[in-house]
Image (cartoon, rainbow, N blue to C red):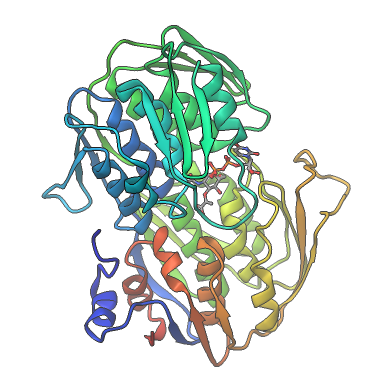
Amino acid sequence: MKTLLSDAADSKAGEKGLSGEVLSIRGGRPLTGRVEVKGAKNLVTKAMVAALLGETPSVLRDVPDISDVQVVRSLLEVHGVRVVDGEEEGTLHLDPAGAVSAHFEEIDAHAGASRIPILFCGPLLHLLGEALIPDLGGCRIGDRPINFHMDALRAFGAVVDKSYEGIRITAPHGLHGADIELPYPSVGATEQVLLTAVRAKGTTELRNAAIEPEIMDLIAVLQKMGAIISYEPNRVILIEGVDSLRGYDHRAIFDRNEAASWACAALATDGDIFVGGAKQQEMLTFLNVFRKVGGDFDVREDGIRFRRGGELKPVVVETDVHPGFMTDWQQPLIVALTQAQGESVVHETVYENRLGFTEALVQMGADIVVHKQGIDAPGRRVPRRALEQAAVINGPTPLHGAEVEVPDLRGGYSYVIAALAAEGRSVVSNVGIIRRGYEKFFAKLQALGADFDVIG
Ligand code: EPU
């Protein structure tokens, strides 16, 4: 595997023999400057899996150097796919010509590292007639079951055997088009259906599908490969299976989660950040909330500039599937809301444990109360889910430095910007998790004027 220390600041830490896991941060300085975002983690990793379906090599552009990409790359290589870096930075060439089955021992090294391996099922079944899937990882933000995935695969005719080693999936009678309605518009399960249906015999109708921009970009990738996919109103996707697919050449959609994270960093630290590569269309919902909180932004051809437009104001936000306010945006937003004048409420409706990170913000001086059963309130638009929670944030409260340990990707990013907004020194440990989804993280912080040292 490639080293995670991939940019100037990170290499310096490497030279000093530090793993880049612990940061000492001196806060109170606005983050100001320009950062670039590359392709979306939540598209790139799936497009890499799609390359398995092609009879010729694929080229993927704007791939960020993050550890989730490295995990998927390594898992593809274990399956005999040749993955080579192209000359243009961030380009991967993926050649599945030598694809082979892997053994449990080989894939086991990838257990717990990412959730993407579950998406290998359909492509491996088509290619090799068998898929072995390790125990899944990903952020500990809820139970994250895979029942929708397994039910969908069974609907295509797959047989699922669970053992202590992982999951073995076969398709003794091949895979055929299916009629599937998801209980919830799950991003992963929608991708599972797409990656399986494109080469299944016959037509698949998927109802209650997720329609996130990253999914639309995956559909574009599959269409380039020769797939026939159409979407209809009300979350219905129709996939007509084809006999063969070829490789693709695709530039990944930009990472709107990373763009939103830096936008919130500008708000929280009272800074001024230009996010190169950010686009308005995919961020409309975020930008509306950003403006209501008191943020100001300029949309330009090559990116979006984010800063405060005055005093920060409280908001009520409900996370939801697209086109709603993404669950991944609420964590960095909550840091900014600790500095807003009044009471904000964030209803988290997608994951049951995505507000746990607020405990560390409270340790830093924030006034946040989490309601574990959620809150019923007049005017709510997103259907109530049994698992939902709510955070009530009262501000503004000065933040002060603390010692905190990163719990998950977006929560971890939020700790770093909280520490940068706080007075005094913080020590943030376990920051390696942040590199799962944020490329050149230390170098970007440095470019924005953050005052920090890598101490471990
Ligand atoms: N769910 C089930 N059963 C399933 C699948 C999902 O009950 O088989 C439930 C989940 O427990 C959750 C809801 O459905 O309550 C939504 O989960 P979804 O499947 O949509 O999420 P995911 O595919 O596992 C992706 C992103 C997440 C992002 C969510 C929502 C990737 C690799 N991950 O997860 O990104 O928060 O969609 O948009 O694409 C992140 O980037 O930090 C991150 C966690």
